[in-house]
Length: 57
Image 1 (tube, rainbow, N blue to C red):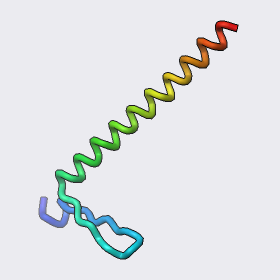
Image 2 (image 1 turned 120 degrees about the vertical axis):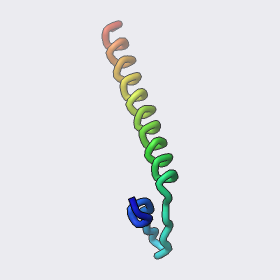
Image 3 (image 1 turned 90 degrees about the vertical axis):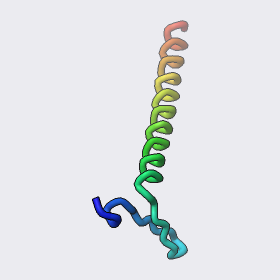
Image 4 (image 1 turned 135 degrees about the horizontal axis):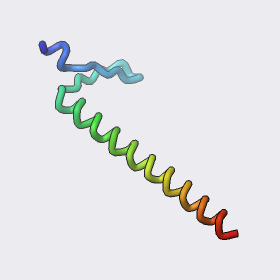
């Protein structure tokens, strides 16, 4: 893998460009998966609470 493939360029509205290293991209991807996991857990939690409350009535 050469350096061009290892770095991704991310453009901002201001016209500035940030070059992310492979490690930074990997860490960002890991954070994104963690956020997805938390969101799914909240969705499941609200679903279960709703079903339980409906069953009690």
